[in-house]
Length: 356
Image 1: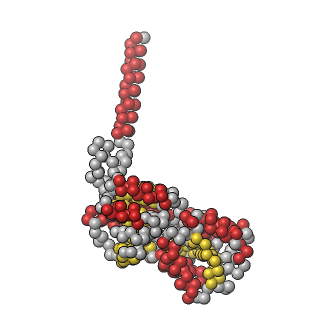
Image 2: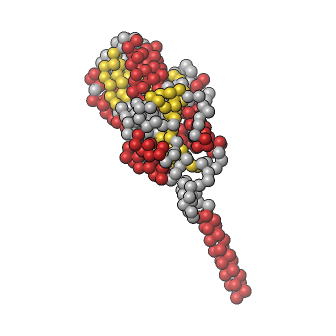
Image 3: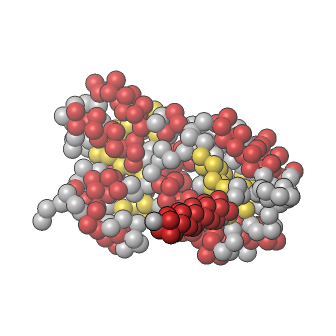
């Protein structure tokens, strides 16, 4: 009995030591905060990129950041991304950018909440020798090292032309856009209004949803349903707004009577397009944009120069390097050749509600 007891004690001790070793190993391999050396506090010898995101309220941003991080790892296996999500709050975004500056990241990539309100904090980054990329949304009066986006005036033109092609017998439309603080909103509206003017179509009303809150756009529409008698179509600033707008129209028994366009090629929007309840969505191949941004990030970190050919765009005070991609109008006729062929969405997901 004593021998057995000793053996059991040895087994218990051995198990305890094994568990402790696993615990120590796990603690030792826990990911470190990018930019921090736990011993010296010195800047790490590998690339650390600070990525400040507006919020994940818009479906596409998760895809952008995932693709960016994957491409960055492909180009530099040691690279890290310190992702900060401001949840749509401007002051939070400013503090998070300052935090990334303090961490001495090598490059800052920013999806701004307010195009007019980040010039001071960008100046802090540049004073610290950190290159700054304005991702998808221009930061005004900031002299960023690169503005990378899509041709947003073209987005508006594609929306407008799709409605014209679909037929607007009363020549009246409404716009339910995103916030004026997003510089892309004004660019999209410029392109859309140009097509409306060229075709003699009246924009009877316009609303800008604060913080891209689709529920606010839907609430505004609910309050103005009596003004929709002669309205042929509604231009929605993005597909999330389009989703709420179509629900509101359905509840008012107006679904199908008013044509809808949006942008971002969200899955629900693509489903509506093939079902026939949304005229089109603007597909912006974010995988190409995110990959190009990762490539430019590496170049700016290594030699502060870009090999990519760029145009120039005024940010209000400076002409900044501007790299853009063309958006694509997606209808039920070219869904397979665009969104599905690129792998952006799976065919079975897009057509799940369509019966032949």
